[in-house]
Image 1 (cartoon, rainbow, N blue to C red):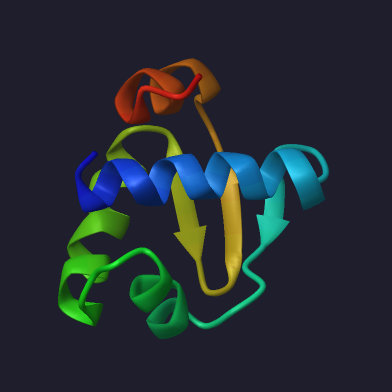
Image 2: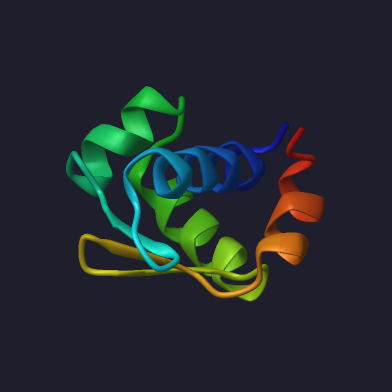
Length: 78
């Protein structure tokens, strides 16, 4: 998976595990999350823009799942 696909899969799992009404709070900073997903902060920034176009929007520390089917197709979620 690409960095953006890994991010999308992580965000979907986060919302499934800890979210309500299609959103969840990021448990760590974006920098820490980038490190955990094997990305640089710059790559994370681009990945956030990519996943937003695929139905997952991050505003501050809040994640919103706007189009689950599209996001799952994008990250090949299974």
